[in-house]
Image (cartoon, rainbow, N blue to C red; front, side):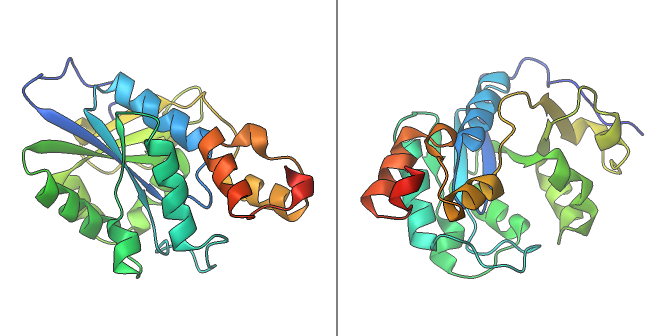
Length: 213
C-alpha cells in the first residue's frame, strides 16, 4: 500500500502539534535548522524539539564532539527561534536511547499534544531495523524529509499505515554533519555551513583550527 505523500489536511487548531527531530547533531548545521523550521511551517507545529543523541543506536563510532558541546550548540540555535526547543533527555541519560523511549518521554511531558517524528528518507529506508518501530507507528506519526523529486523510492519501504506517514520535499540543504567534520579535520572553511551561533560557539571553545575559520 503506498504511503501518503501529501501533507495532512488543515490541522485542528485545538490540537497541539509537536515535531521531534533527533540526531547526533555532530554538529548541528544549517540543514538541520532549515528542515526544522520548514517542517514547523508546513505542518503547523507549535514547537519542534531538537534532541541530541548521546549515542545513536545504529552507529558504532563515537561522536566527534562531546555530548556537552553538542547540546550547547543545539541550545545556541534554539535560542534564536521561538518554535525551536532543545530536548536534552538522551544527553541527560548518558546512554544509548531508543527513539521510542525518548518519544514516550516527550508524550509524558506533553500529554495533550500530537507528536510527529521527523526523519530523513535515508533513515526511513532503514526504519524496519529500528527497535520498537511498530510501537512508534502505533503512537506517533512520521514526517519524512524526501531528497528525491518523487516519493517512489521511499514508498517502496513503507509497510505501515499510510495515514501515519507524511513526506516533505527536502530542497533546503544538501550538506551533512559528516561533511562538516571532514572539513574541520582538513582545516577547510565551514562557516557557511553552520548557524552563526554554532560557529561562534566553536570559535569560543576552540573546537575548530584557526585555518578552518
